[in-house]
Amino acid sequence: YMLTYIPLGGRNMLRNISSRLTDKLIAQKEFCHYDRDVYIYGIELIISTLAGLISIIGVSKLYSCTILGVIFIIFFVPLRLFTGGYHANTYGKCYFVSILSFGILLSIQYFSWNKISSLFWLFLLLVADFYICKNAPMINRNQEISPQKKQISKAMARKIVFVEGVLILLLAIVDKRIMSMAVLSVWLVVIFMLLANKYFQKGVERS
Image (cartoon, rainbow, N blue to C red; front, side, top):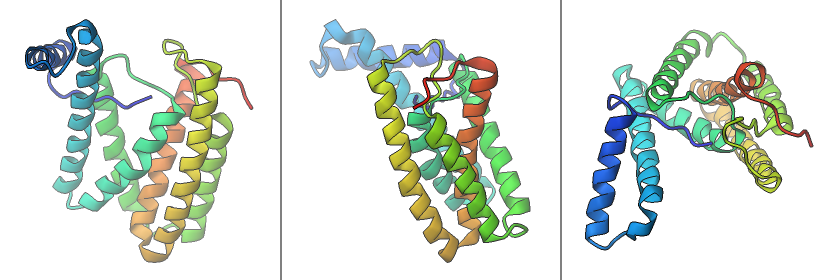
């Protein structure tokens, strides 16, 4: 369920970089050559994910709201790991969708955070958390996982929802602006789940 990003011009470039890094590590006897493909895939994920996270911080810094980028990462990424949902079929598309989604979220937050009461923000959070707890994970039809892993993902998603809920309650007291971004970040997780359920993927067994 990891979000993967790649602003480097496509999967081939990412694969070439990952291959070269893997071969260097194998040559230095850091990696075993028998698992070369596994290491290449792992390095692809690390590079692409770091590129996406850095881009998000860069965009938020550009708009003088770095803290909102950090809040987005803290509240969106952990849930996204275990809730599943829509995934683009290429690194480039995934990167574009991720950055575009974050930009839209920033715009919504800018125009709405002080126009909506804290209680209503918390109500929106409650709705989102209920949906996540009931429906996570949304499984990609091309990434089937075992029933045991589904249960683990569901349990982890519920734990993260609880922890994030407590943090957002505290933020509601400390800083409404930051709290609103946290709530919107959780809602973006819900939107990706809804998109997957309606258009791209099949739902999982409800429990």
